[in-house]
Length: 57
Image (cartoon, rainbow, N blue to C red):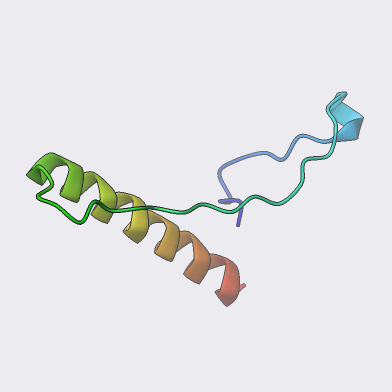
């Protein structure tokens, strides 16, 4: 899921391999400020787009 405009650095660049990572977004069950809701929506939509790009090729 690496966008085409980014470069992957690896052992040839002197960096160790990194394990896959998972992201979890936890939302409060109480009232959340509108800015926090917008940030959560942005993060989720960005991850969805990247997942869709990776799945399509």
